[in-house]
Image (cartoon, rainbow, N blue to C red):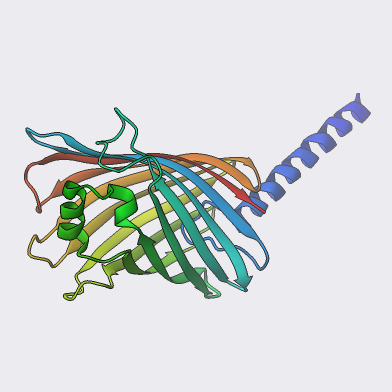
Length: 275
């Protein structure tokens, strides 16, 4: 009996040690962290499928159905290159059929850099270039040309520069409060109108799960004075140490730019794998 109990105790101890080791490994390489960057010669693939909807009172809703592939590739310590390609579908009953066809691609290329302190503070800076072809999206009909001229001018490609800075503090037990501030603007516009976004959130790693929750404020200083406050959240499950499946959602709480907007939200499912 004594030998049997010792064997069971040894097995339980080994299982507990294994669980602790796996948990520590995941905490060190939490690919779901909002400040995660790949190590040198590693690549993180994120495939997402999103649906967003903005409902206007007494009018139809603006809808988009978007498939996107994003890759983060480590090129130096704490430095990753970002490359993304997305497609906006023209699917009946899921979108407004605003586009010319079902192939409406956009592209993004950028770089991100992390700076870490010994006490667990992480600061991340990033910049990227975003572009798409309005003529490919909307076609060449007289109505499409008028829409393109009104929203994009006569440019062949819509081109945008984006910048973002994030900061987070790694607390014990996989908890990390963080914040982010981003800006973007069309580089072809003569008035160079800029759009801003500020976010405060918290990230939590709990065994095979990770969770995010936060508030986001989107605004600009244009004549329209756009201001929107969103609540957002996400949950991801670790299928393995390097593979996750999860969901994201946000919802517009209040906004001052258009009182006719009754609600706006985004839902998304995503799959990550680290190579």
